[in-house]
Length: 130
Image 1 (cartoon, rainbow, N blue to C red):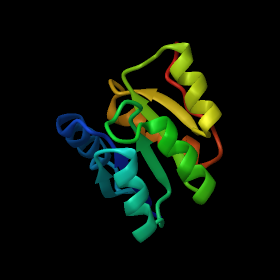
Image 2 (cartoon, helix red, strand yellow):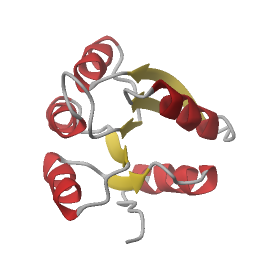
Image 3 (cartoon, helix red, strand yellow):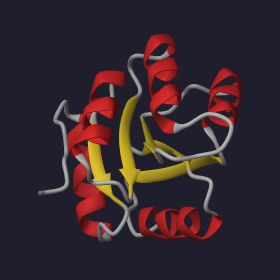
Image 4 (cartoon, one colour):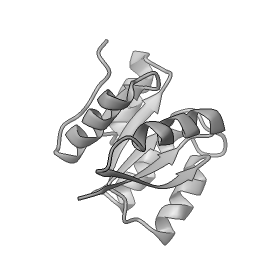
């Protein structure tokens, strides 16, 4: 079975790096990318057949915390993993309050990203150590 992945990330270079990491795994299928939360919500209205969203926190127009709240209200079955550079308690707390299923730092390697996606699909809550 292929798990369908969407990415919300405003930095094109970082989005490309994440997409490349996903490409190593046959059970993951990249579906689409959005540059902010508002674009993500719009794309989900057209196709919410997504298993996991990798969500940045700081994005223009609509940040990842607000987008997470909206996605979870409309599509509670979609898992959301925050993929961010922020490892401070406040952002972690806000993300979990908004309904995030996991919280990872962007420097994560491909194998751990894959393992974390599978963990969240199976009901776990992947977190970057620390």
